[in-house]
Length: 184
Image (cartoon, rainbow, N blue to C red; front, side):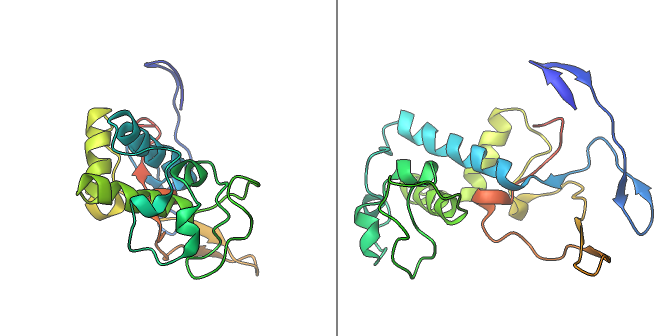
């Protein structure tokens, strides 16, 4: 789908929603949108910044006081948003001083979802559902709330065999939202 503003310039489906049955894609078939999910999480955080509930330069310990890691006192919300935090695993030391390097990360966005739940008192799934509704995205959802037609993913194994993807994405805030091309 190619759009300019609200005007759809080109839209076409091709390929199979079900590879084994050779069922063609339909316009409203849903997909896990991967790292586009990070943009949605960032919007939710920035809405809380606008409301004054989150400060970008605040260390994350303010929002997640139960974190036992020392780095929670130096990593800020901004570091999480910009992949400059240095966190490689929750139980490890930082890979680098926050703000000194860039390292693309999933874990930072999961921490942002945790912050959103803490400052709003609402589940991340509900927060995202409210945003999708506000934006008129009727076919987008958190996987826990999805009621549409999610197309199963396929991947090519090292031996060349095409296999059904059965593993769920653990960090929804970083890569697990569901949507359609038209909604996006």
